[in-house]
Amino acid sequence: GEWEPTWSSRAAEEAEAVAAIPCSGHGRVYLDGLILKGHEPVCECNPCYGGSDCSKLLSDCAANAAGGDPYFMEPFWMRHAASSAILVSGWHRMGYSYSDKSYISQLLVEYIKKLHAIVGNAITKGKYIVFGSGSTQLLNAAVYALSPNSSMSPAKVVATAPYYPVYRTQTQFFNSRDFSYEGETSSWKNKTDKNSIFIEFVTSPNNPDGKLTKEVLEGPNVKSIYDRAYYWPHFTAIPSPADDDLMIFTISKLTGHAGSRFGWAIVKDEAVYEKMLTYMDMNTMGVSREAQLRALKLLDVALEGDGKEIFQFAYSTMRDRWIRLKEIISKTKRFSLQKISSQYCTFFKRGRDASPAYAWLMCERQQDKNCYEILEAAGINGREGSLYSADNRYVRLSLIRSQDDFEILINKLKILVSKE
Image 1: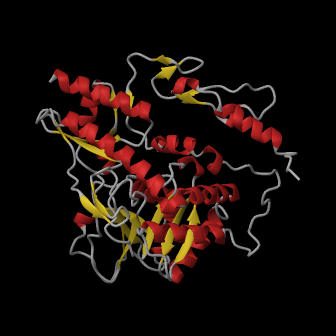
Image 2: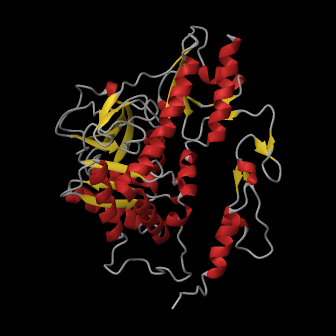
Image 3: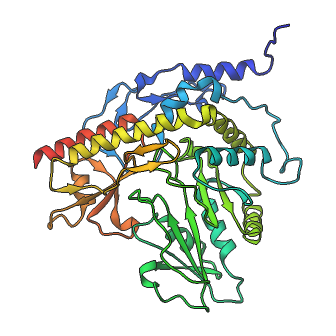
């Protein structure tokens, strides 16, 4: 006979109810405001929009190009509302571990391996996989696992500018006796010795400039952590599968679900893998079961048609934004953008144009010593170069936010360039 929902009916109705509220196309209603009795759903408006239905465009509002929220993927998931939805019972996996006594879903591990095999961006055969609450938690877990015990001198943690500031701030925050932040790789080139262990962060593609990079330091005591958060076909060409000893990925830059806080590390050495597991055990006892369940559902959708639909959508969106931005900046000599060449991509099986997650904008005029302040005065909020250990003539502008955010950014830049 036909199946009739029982306890799930109300939950499904609530999800449909909030999804049906349009907020004028400039905001979103979430379940948070509906599941509690006596609470009415409220539109949460995109930046620069207000009113009960987000229909009011706010004047004198600055463009938000600072944050890395990947809202550019939201339209894809709205088109796949049915296939990506998930309804969780109140008694879903209430225990601390899975049936194999681990904190890691082996089914999700298999889907991650399948995804990398189809995309061709990482080799997983013969390697171990660790889950973390986003890549952020895994970064320090990796530093911990690669560091010597306290009987030796602390490992020196380094990176090449411009680099993601969390490498520095997180290492300094934990203030461990086993590792310490020791600045840029340029200070240690040709200075590595057998008495010190170096841990080099390598971001490829790089945040903030989107360039494919490699480690700088060499020697038997140099260990590298490859942050591969952006090594997906929508942000960069995939010339070959990465085969680094320790690679970190995150779902936030793959599917756009930054709030789910799910990432994974692919580890070659078993001893390093075991130390990372110990870190996760002591820190959070693994990743939330709900986050793992959602990640599994999202990857299942992403793998449909061998990933062609999701990556084509994401790549087209990012490429078009980059083209529009370049066109505006090409009309002025006051600003310039990073140079990223077209390259053959093994996933798309053709050459592809640049489509970086961020614009690394430079103020070219000698008197414009602080580019962040120049843009801020024009109503554009980015992130100053010094955050990335670079000169303040640079500013990072996020291109992965919502379409509203991007359009406001483009309009502000047009006005700034036209004034010149």
